[in-house]
Length: 89
Image (cartoon, rainbow, N blue to C red):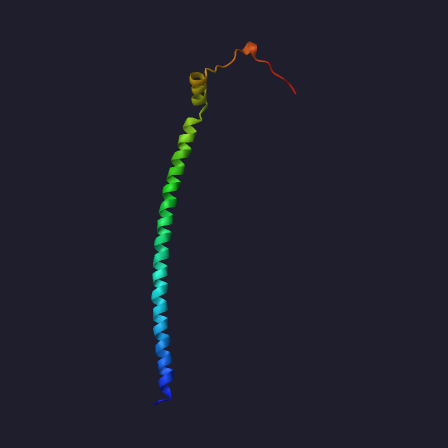
């Protein structure tokens, strides 16, 4: 009976260590999954903000808006056709 005792003790220790490793792996998996979910939520929010910024940029950069700002703030105007000189290379 004494011959099998070390083997049984070794098997019990192996089962115990294996169960602790499983608990640790499940914990790490859940923690990582939560981090991934948070990162994906942040990514989705940033994609929405990027879309809004693209729409805003398109609105601010229309030709009509640029001409309006140039006329109002910079006192620019389209030159008379007679004053335009075309230079050929």
